[in-house]
Amino acid sequence: MTLETQRVVVVGAGQAGIALCAKLRNLGHTGPITLIGVEPAPPYQRPPLSKAYALGEMDAERLYLRPEEFYEQHKIDLRVSTRVTEIDRAARSIETDNGDTIGYDSLVLATGAPPRRLPAAIGGDLDGVLCIRTLEDADRFAGYLGSAKNVLIVGGGYIGLEAAAVAAKKGLKVTLIEAAPRILGRVACAETADYIRHLHTSHGVDIREGTGLERLTGTDGKVSHATLGNGDVIEADFVVVGIGVTPETMLAETSGITLDNGIAVDELSRTSDPSISAIGDCASFPYRGDRIRLESVGNAIAQAEATAAAIMGNETPYVAKPWFWSDQYDVKLQIAGLGTGHDLIVERATDEKVKSFWYFRGDKLVAIDAMNAPRDYMMAKRWIENGQSPRPDDIRDPDAVLKSLAVTANGSSGSA
Image (cartoon, rainbow, N blue to C red; front, side):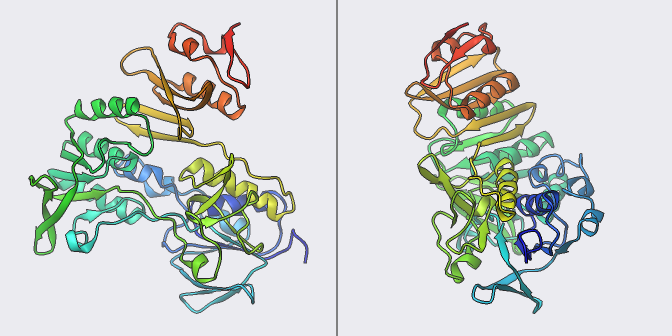
């Protein structure tokens, strides 16, 4: 057996899983590749589920990451509606719920991060309470959008806010509650939160921050009302839950693989068992002296492709370049870098709709949130990835041409 002919099994048929399989074939891998997914559909995009797909602007086939014939043409054994139940590390094989045993030389876990759900004790199991992660979830969401009048969104992160925007566009009465003091508390600065809050309230969304959910109640098993932490009772024809995700680590844990905020991997995406890798939302990896998990399409693809190269013998450490996006109403929010530990926010504004917020730690640019400001985003992303920083005062000037700013790795700059 050579690296090109080894047996590769990928558990998880999402963005990361299919990206790895495709990259292996692109790099000349000729051995067996098995891609296993629990859902009945072939690998598809998740971001449009709560937006374009739910609004009827995109059909299911346009969601598919590859046409169905791709798998046969590239000799990828795609197994849908299949769950892996066990990893036998000694035998280098996996067991599936239909009784199959599949051997591997390299096993890749791309199991993702399912959404957290509300406890059944407070009504989380009532009909009409949903998260939006799968095609089935999105179909339910679209059905409610066409028939309901009142929706409660639980959670003021990006998933909840995107769902709120879609529901408001469809004319529903939308109430969004966030138990923390403000929306986007874990992922964005207060200035970005203020911008997004104003955007939603201007479209009629009732945002209630510092407000938790006490319980959901209903009739004949169907949700109808929500009692909030402050005692308010509101109508809810359905409820969308967006309170974060939990990395899927059960297979790794039961097989004795090391966990640390997900499945712990090294710079080559190898777990504590060198024949097993983990990629995408389920994996935590080294990043600038820390260990992080990135829940993004960009990371899923980039890490998958780097891991495919490592399986083929090119052991170049994976260096993450964090970037994200969110579409809400007519605003495209683009994010680059990680703002953790920032001590200065610099605003750059063309008008009320076109703004960017630049995160600095000391004199170092670490992240940007750009709203309808793609040029700001692209310039900042390049600087962050190159370890360069402009001077904050230069960024504040909306008339300054970003490309004209001289930047250095230590953060000093001036107009060229």
